[in-house]
Length: 191
Image (tube, rainbow, N blue to C red; front, side, top):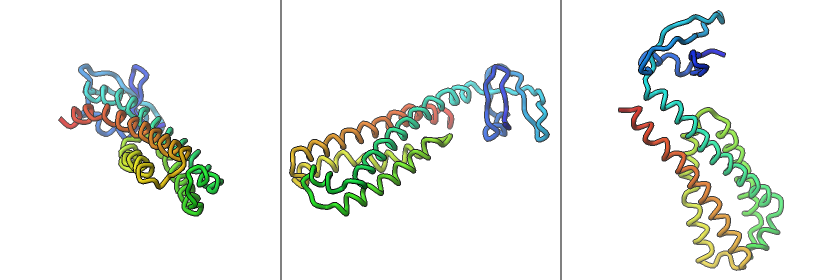
């Protein structure tokens, strides 16, 4: 594994390594760097407190956005499977006869779930969380619109559509909170 190992057991990947000369803590520490031959050489490096705090908070933020992406992937997978496998049943619950459209929506949701599962497995989830938040934020309002306009006529269908909107709204809130927590750190980094 290439990268820089701190003497306190921490690790910075090689992607961060080249910029470590400008990023420092208040005190120098001894770090080990694995060279091209695999040998470990000791070196003194100074790290900025700001960067250390950024790394600590980045883990929390990445975890929050990763959880939001994973929750959305799981919900999209479940809904997509239901719509793709049993569109006539779901159409009956909703009081609509659009089986073909429901099946296509289910297949699209399966693709969405696969993309989100992949994004949640990435090291950096912030951009994916931003894109997904933009995609799902209007969804709860659309679900309310379906009920208000009468496009979903059965009470069971209305309840399902509103519950779906509430769940997606909660996932969007998870995204927003994770991204909001990261905002002050990113501003401090740029200063």
